[in-house]
Amino acid sequence: MTLIQWYYDFLVYLRIHKDRSPRTVEQYSFHLWRFMRFLNPRSILFKKYTYKVFLDFAKLSSIDMRKLVREMSEDYTVLLDDIALDDIKSWRVSLLDHNISPKTMNAHMITLRSWFKYLKKEGYNTIDPTSIDLMQEKDREVTFLTSDEVKQLFLSIDRESIQGKRDFAIIWCIYATWLRISELTSLNRSDIREESDQVGISIRGKWSKLRMVYLTNEAKSVIIEYINARSDHFSPLFIRHNFDMNNISAHDLSDESVRLSRFFITNMIKDRALRANIAKDISAHTLRHSFATTLLGNGADIRIIQELLWHASITTTQVYTHVTNARLAEAHKLFHHD
Image (tube, rainbow, N blue to C red; front, side):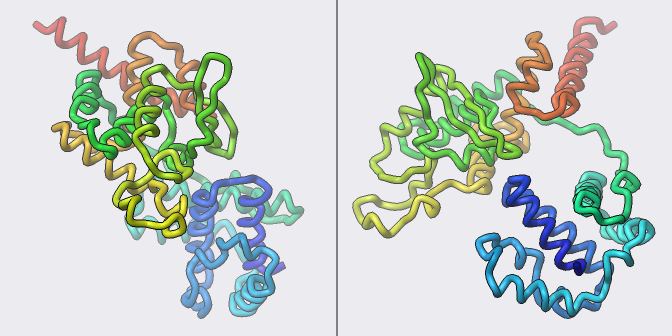
């Protein structure tokens, strides 16, 4: 098969067989596209199209898609056998010339590792994925809110308006249930489930794993308050409200057209923090970090926090121990200064 075909088949494998999210597949596609352009910068069609051209998986079996793969294969002269480890090293140097961070560099290299691992799985004798080195990254810095700042944030939200009720519920959900922003944006009203005497949210999270997140009484209360204040028919749990339900027909807007985006929620959280006079650049992850740091500081077992945050590796969770240890060191200085 041609290199273009291997590239496309890998994306199909990720999306269909490994059930990776569209966002993850798009990232892998972008990284591989950059690598292939580096290998053959004179390719005319690589200049004509972007990496997104292969991401329409609704056209998997279409004649148009097969024709495009064939057309690009004829234009792209590099063969899989032509790729050597030195090419990857040269590409790494090229990326460094663009001043990308070690984290971004490693994301590109991890994509290549995954691609070559897939090729080996398919029986192709190619570069050993483990020979592709990663860069040393600095210790990850965690931004978090103190307990007082969390109270300050919630108290600053006016819950009289529908937008205020919505924003309060969103921030509370992220803080108290540790939902990722991608999980939050995909929620529908029907995902709120009642089991025995508990209310939970059915989540399809990272790696498409299904899990039930149980709501605290406070989280349940603020979500119900927001839902009861709505007068629309839309399915998404959290929606935009910059339209008048009295002036639109049932067919004017779809569920997806009113569903909040990651971008909207990220900006809303930043805006709410500014209104609360919190001088930190916060995000949805900051809220997750804040609650995890508070739990760890109060003596919670790190394995429990790993489960609550749905971290695949304990290494990811251990970043919070650095934060709490730093806070303990600061407290020690305060109370034991000369």
